[in-house]
Structure formats: C-alpha cells, structure tokens
Length: 209
Ligand code: SF4
Image 1 (cartoon, rainbow, N blue to C red):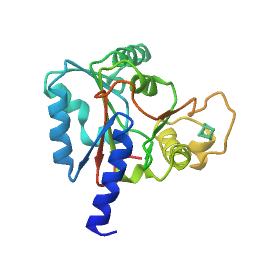
Image 2: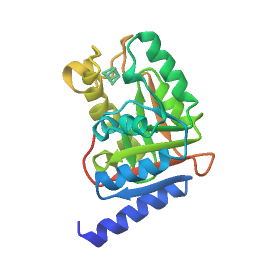
Image 3: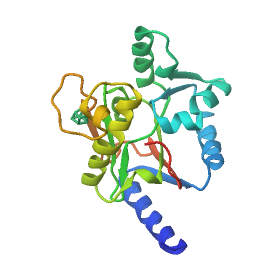
Image 4: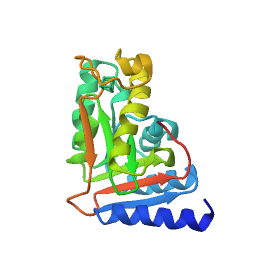
C-alpha cells in the first residue's frame, strides 16, 4: 500500500469512529504518542489504568506517577484486597487509560475481559477514556475483531496471567466451558453516548497483543 492509499484508509477509519462519537488520532512514533498522553493526563487528578501489555511497554503508569497524579493500577498492588480496591477506584477515576484487543475499520472496539473491571470502566464512569492501540490490532469488521480478540489476544493474555485454560495451554480458543474462563466478558463498543469522552490513539506500529 503506498502512502496516499494508507492516508485515505486511515482517514476513512477515523471517520467511521468519529461518526460514533469516538475521537481518533494517529501517531508515527512512541514519543509523539507519549507527549499527547502527557497532555491529556495533565488535565486530571486521578488516572485509572486498564492492565495491558501496550501500556506497560510505554510505561504509562510510571509517567502519570512522575507527573504527580494519583494512579489506580492494579498491577502495583501487593495483596488481593488491594487489587480489588484499585480496580474499584479506577472505575471512578477522572481519566481511564487502557488498550483494546481489537478494533475494526467499521468503527468497533472489542475486548475480552476476565473480571470485567476494564470493560466496565471503558463503558461508564471515568470522564475521559484513552485507548492506545497498535495497527496490528486492526481488523476489517466487528466479526473479525471478535475473532482476533478470542483467538489471538486472549490466549496470549491468559498465558501472561498464568491462567490455566485451554487457550493458555494450546494458544487457541477451543470454546471451553470451564469455571476458570478468561473470556467471562466480551465487550463491543459501537459508539459513545457522550461526545468527547473516548479517544482512540493509534500508533502506526505493532504494539501489544
Ligand atoms: S472459551 Fe475457553 S479456551 Fe476460549 S477464550 Fe474462553 S477460556 Fe479460553
């Protein structure tokens, strides 16, 4: 794909999200993206973090802490009780930052969640929601985005979290019915009720899974 084709394609994807009240911005480099996130963070007191490999690799929690913000990141907890409390606090944070498992050209954002805290905060609560995502998570349609979330992202996330499920063992979803399932919640965001609440920050590289 040449540069002008790529530009047209990105413009079309952006319009598909913007029609659904979801802002979109593209970034060519991690530095550009981090500067934009810093700008956003500076407007808020409390920052909720939805655990993600993408955010970890960009050190988003550390950046927010350095900026003097109160950060609710469950991965910084020492006990199970602390994890629960941080997840609850993040639900009413001023600004929630996370990634997604897939997004589609037709304007959908898909996530598979184990305990539901991440999809809950993305859906309602925080005043501002920033979703940072690499181009590797782009699919053509909602159906393909769900497929990616279940068969690519979930097995890798299950493995990372050391959850014993068929997907973590075999690195693929076998549609199991076990109690310790990773995919308790599948969320499809098809738009935002409140304009100016949600923004997709797309970096033109492969990031996270
Ligand atoms: S149905 Fe089972 S194998 Fe498939 S993603 Fe969920 S937990 Fe993993």
